[in-house]
Amino acid sequence: SSELTQDPAVSVALGQTVRITCQGDSLRSYSVSWYQQKPGQAPVLVMYGKDNRPSGIPDRFSGSSSGNTASLIITGAQAGDEADYYCNSRDSSGNLVVFGGGTKVTVL
Amino acid sequence: EVQLVETGGAVIQSGGSLRLSCAASGFTFKPYTMHWVRQAPGKGLEWVSLIRGNGGGIVYADSVRGRFTISRDNSKNSLYLQMNSLRTEDTALYYCVKEHISGWPTFDHWGQGTLVTVSS
Image 1 (cartoon, rainbow over the protein chains, first blue to last red):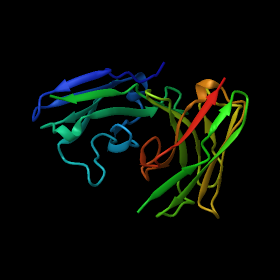
Image 2: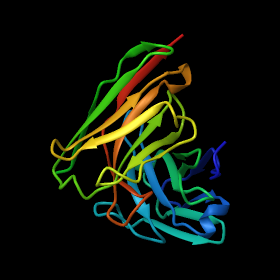
Image 3: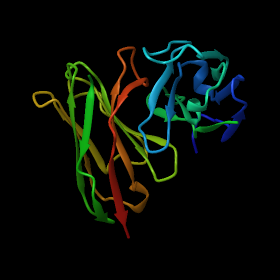
């Protein structure tokens, strides 16, 4: 089982806002990164640290973190945002990398 | 443009060995920590191992420690994963991953993966 917990699936209406959460005790000490993975493709980094977007990632993606919970927020979701989203961070010991189980985002 | 190209995946019997390779290009390889991450068919991402730029600081996931060995050759801009005593649960797409300059575990470039299938 993962030390980072994500909801398995969420849905959002086109153009609306969706929050994807990642929970884990290690998030009180270590930062989180977020990845988007579309079917048949490799993951793509979409957010890291508190609220840092790599170049090329639209500004409708934002991040936040409080206590043991980190969130990836998509404001104005587009059909192209439909994908699996994974969070990752360090484990509680700080020595290993852990991934959340992933959240499947469906845009209605 | 950063490119990571994995090779070496195959169908192999349980208990066997396999060596994966990753050829890196488009960036200065030596300073960067590199990782292997795997994904079983239809499942989520699982981190496997990391190696620092100088070849030290090696860390393994509990699930592979003692069976897998990560290494790199900076003169060839290459990353490797020697996998021994393979089990059916090692069946996965194995990604070669570059760490972001901000540090781990932020991964800013991924290869397309190489498929390892372990049969019983």
